[in-house]
Length: 410
Image 1 (cartoon, rainbow, N blue to C red):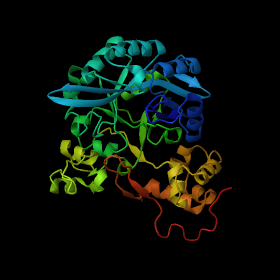
Image 2 (cartoon, rainbow, N blue to C red):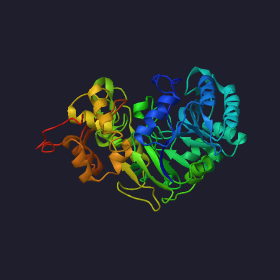
Image 3 (cartoon, helix red, strand yellow):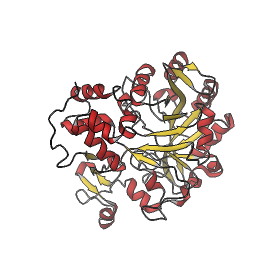
Image 4 (cartoon, one colour):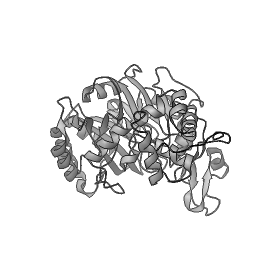
């Protein structure tokens, strides 16, 4: 069966996260968006763990169900430790096939730090030692390095990461099969690094609010089960792993280099000209994802490796609507327009990726239809994000709104 999966989110028990990040609300939003499988996030937090165990129904296939939406037990660990004479800050996402195994993980990791401090706990465990602990509990546990290019907390992060996977995980590198590209990079950027060819590149929302789930996701055509998902992620098969859904990476918070306090936003070439120094304050710039990929790449832009899993770039429907009316995506006007479209035309993913252009133009206000078509074609302007600030997107161009008489669907 074909389905959309977002495997990395957070619960209401993580810092800076919406109190709406609970199972009932997540299920409602997942159905609107067309997501059939969600990661639970944060199973290492004792309160969320109990809430999950009391709320979800065991499907008997390593997944759990609530009101027609499937859930996989997932959690993210923030490891801060010293290695090779440098402080490392690495985020890893854990998939677990049962509450029993998740409980064993929690018991083991509680010896390294306070799991109750946050839904995404910070613990003093080397990423290699984390892998050793997890695979010692069960070979069915799946470990994925999270948002691998983010400067401050990731495998290849410019501030605290490594240059190779082997350097980070040592003998357990062979047990890592998938990498999460993160919002500020897409598979095309990662294809420039031949050392990543053996890995499946997955995309998830890392969402802190229900509205943001699915902003990045994975599309599979497999059985709905934990084993089917993890087995698929261990090999490259574009008949089973169909494609990923991607943010435009320029929209991500760390795509370009820069210094937010000084309003400096640099491309990699501009950063080199300035020797990595902010010309305003004289401090080091935060080196973003694009520069970090450039530093480790051994291939030109545009290279596509054999058996690569394809991807589609997408902007969430609420952001598209907001751009057409010139208001915040959180406004009531945008919410009303969204609810008028969904489910009359289908789920959000169907509207954004599958419904024919002619039908969009016939059934949607002209601005929204043309904006969706522009996004599908990549015909958008984006001022790249940098140093923790999201990029700014312009979807509609001059002439896109000519002839429009009616905006609202309701």
